[in-house]
Amino acid sequence: MAQLDILMELQRNKVLESLSKGKRLSGRNFDQYREVEVLTNVSENANGSARIRLGKTDVIAGTKFALGTPFPDTPNEGSIAVGAELTPLASPLNEVGPPSKDEVELSRVVDRGIRESHCIDLESLCITEGEKVLSMYIDIYAVNDDGNLFDASSMAALVALNNTRLPKLEDGVMVNGEYNGMLKLSNQPLLSTTVKASNHVLSDADLGEEKSMHARFSFGSTEKGVLTAFQKGGSGSYSIAELEKAIEMGLKNGKSLRKLLKV
View 1 (cartoon, rainbow, N blue to C red):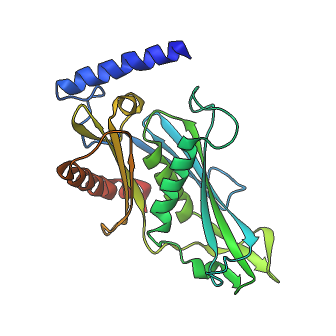
View 2: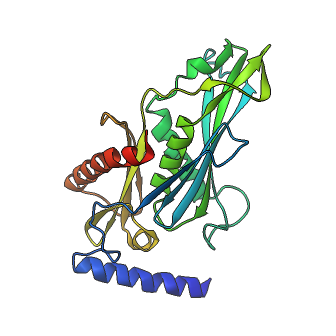
């Protein structure tokens, strides 16, 4: 692990040296994303699934349904929940065991971006009011972590949702392997994440840039530019002007990304 720390420190120094000259080490513009590759239906057992490669960052997302009981304050609504697993395959820093703080943060931020957009009609997941509903689980697995897992996970989750098949129900029971139409989304929420490093605001930071950052800012938005969620990370801060710049960059990139994702 000490050797890894040394390598990351060397990478961090290279990133900061390049930024001090007004350039990213990768040669990308400050607002430019890495190449995006989209694969759909990567799991036969999931109701919907997708794999996103954002540069070298590689994430898989899948959706599944289960029968459950509604919450007392929303007796006529189903539920959604997002879980994230940062596998040891993704990074030597990840360990098997209880959810880490990074996994908890990743799942909560992706969840919030989807939930607060109200893109899913939870009432449509109700089977019997006050008794039985469908609960949808969105599971995210990091295969390789080269930075910006937030946006890669958000993209994978959105594509998986758009390819989600609704389970067939008979007498209030799900029929295994049979489906009844597709899940319909009322909007297309995406996260956009920037980091602040060496007083520069960077879109889609790779791992070296993340290790060099002072602060991170993520926000969720719909295709109509409605802001749905915010998350600040890191010990540093953004000025009002920097936040406005980050949002402007994110909304612009969101339009291009949705075209690539075909959502």
